[in-house]
Image: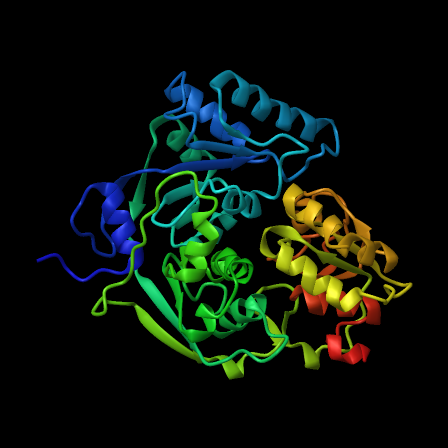
Length: 421
C-alpha cells in the first residue's frame, strides 16, 4: 500500500512516474510548462541551444516579455529581441508580444496555460503563483529553465509541506494580501525554506480566485518552494472556461505527514503593511499612520488583477490623490486593462489624478515606470521591499493591499479606507 502523501508529493510522484515519493528524495520529473521572461529567457535560450536545436515541445515553452517592455532602453530592447527571435525560430505558440502580453503570473492563469495538477518551472521566483490552481509550480534559475526547455525534464528534491489552516471569517476589508502578509509576519522570510506551503480552511475557501493567486504568489517570500491551495468549486469555475489541457486535482491524504500544521483564526488577521526592508516586517496598518509616502503603486503579479483594480477604484472614486503623491496604476494584463475601461475604473483612476500604465512589471523590480529617488517612500501592492528594490538604496517600500495603497495615496500617508470617511 502506498504511503499517505501530501498534495505536493502526489503531483511530483505522478510526474516522476512513481507510485510514491517522500521528502528529501531526489527525483527526475516530466514538466508540463517551462516559463521564462525577457530578463531570464536569454540565458535559458543559450543553455537550451547548447543541448538541442529544438525545444522539447513548442506548445509547452512559454515566453513572456514583461519586465522591461515596452522596452525602456537599448539593452532591454536587445533582451526582448533575443526572446522574440527564438520564439519565431522555434514556433513557440505561447509567446506574448507587446500588446498581447501581461505580467506573466497574471497572464498564464488568465489564458488557461496552467491548471490543476501541472508541474511547472519558471525562471522567475514568483512562478509559485499557480499553486492557487492546485499546481506544483516553482521558480528556478535560468540554466535550469534552459535545460527544461530542451529536455522537458527537471530534477527535484521532494519538499516537506507546512499546512496553514485559516478558519473563520475574515473581517470586512481584509483580503488575500493581508492573509499572506500575516503568515509571512508569523513565520518569517525563511520560515518555509524549501518547503511546500499548503493553504486550507474555511477562510481560504471563501476567497475569490484573484485573492488566492495573491496568497500563492508570495509563498516564495516565506522561502516556500511552492504555495498550493486545494482545488474546489471556485477553482473549477475559474479553470473550466479557460484551461487548454485536461487537469487533475490532487488532495493531501487525511493521514499525510506534514512538517508542521499552523492554525490561524481569520479574526486575528487585520489590514497589514510590511515595513522595510523585509516582507516579514509586518504591522497592522492602523499602527503605521505616521508614515508619509511619495508614491503608491497598484499592480504587479501579486495585485494587478481585476479584483485588485476594483478594490482600488472603490476607494479612489470621487477622490483625488494627495498633491504630494504619485499614484501609478498598472493593470496586470491587456484583458484586465480592457475590463477597467469597460467598467469605468480607468475613468475613476484618471479623475483621481492617477497615472495608468500598459501591463508591465515596471517599478516592482526597480525596472522603470516609477523608480524612487533617494529617501523617497512608496506604498505598493507588490511582493518585495528589499533595500533598493524600487530604486535608490535609501528609498523605502511598504507592502499592502490595493485598498490600503489607494487610501494611502489619497491621505498622503499610510492609512485605511475608513480614514477617508
